[in-house]
Length: 249
Image 1 (spheres, helix red, strand yellow):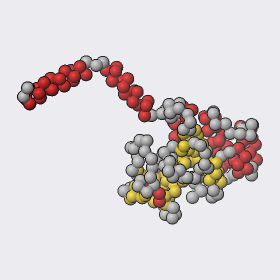
Image 2 (cartoon, rainbow, N blue to C red; image 1 turned 180 degrees about the vertical axis):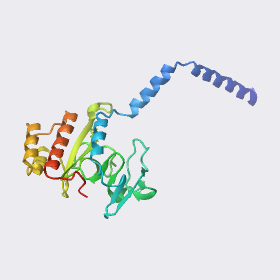
Image 3 (cartoon, helix red, strand yellow; image 1 turned 45 degrees about the vertical axis):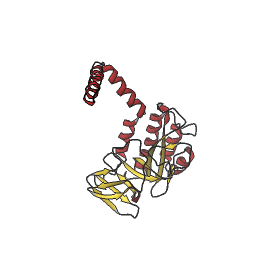
Image 4 (cartoon, rainbow, N blue to C red; image 1 turned 90 degrees about the vertical axis):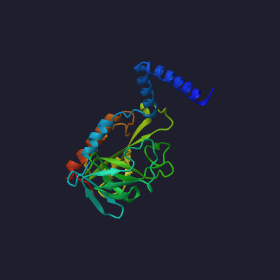
């Protein structure tokens, strides 16, 4: 067999395989797409509810978007873009990533506050746990960006973590954590006693808090109820303490 005959034979072989592939039913392709999608993505329950509350937590008195650098400089504009916007399942390296505000490039590690069109985020150092923080660099997990749900005398923030001990495709894998900041104080984790101590100077909010969380604990299994109750308490505290509902910085 000469080389041209080998090419022709190979060509017919591939042609046969291609025609066989064309006869595969579309349902098989659709099933493959669904399998790949579910293999790479885990469901995100309650995402819409949190996005709605995050818009309430934005600073409506400021520009559409802005960031505050760690040296205190505030950079405001109309559009923010990010180097990691379309990257999936990627560790974030603060030394390599960046954002731009109206074309001005700022290193990811140079700012501690950022407001996009959907949320305001601040840098927070979570307490060490056995939970892997989503979208955090596993080699440098001491800081993450948390999203603000409420602003005022009490600032309430939220972040989503994943429990690595639970199956990848389980909805229970996602853990919703809350942190708060009283006026210009430090950011701390929301637990029953810490949060109660922070709002005890407002009798109305304090009594409502004890009513909504009678077991002296904040449940994690009823996500929507906890979200509703914590934001209600924050709103009550801010409104009855004369808070302006704006950011503390």
